[in-house]
Picture (tube, rainbow, N blue to C red):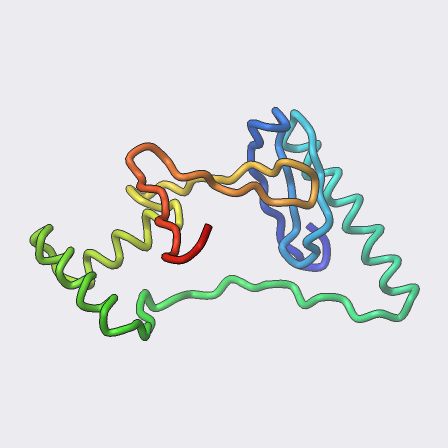
Length: 145
């Protein structure tokens, strides 16, 4: 991309095409059945957006950089959630850390070392991932209709 801006390329089942987006410019998108063409469309849109912002004297977004993560972070949760997670981990015969890591990986779509992509339904929008088979629907809060 230009000026150090990144690109994300994903296949969209809905569009039956590749969707290229730029994280620093959420509304910009390139869509084409050919991955290289989708990226070329995005590059053109990005060049025009940068040109307009510069002409208007507006600040450009800072390009995102590659950051190395340690694999550790601290998370505060309710005591009741902590207890429930510890109980579930014990039921599975794994440590709390391993259990929570597995749950987070599944929720983030990176279970088993692969990342699931989410198709864009329209240019500039993100699709909502629907619960998969075997997932339980959320219970309604008591007192709601």
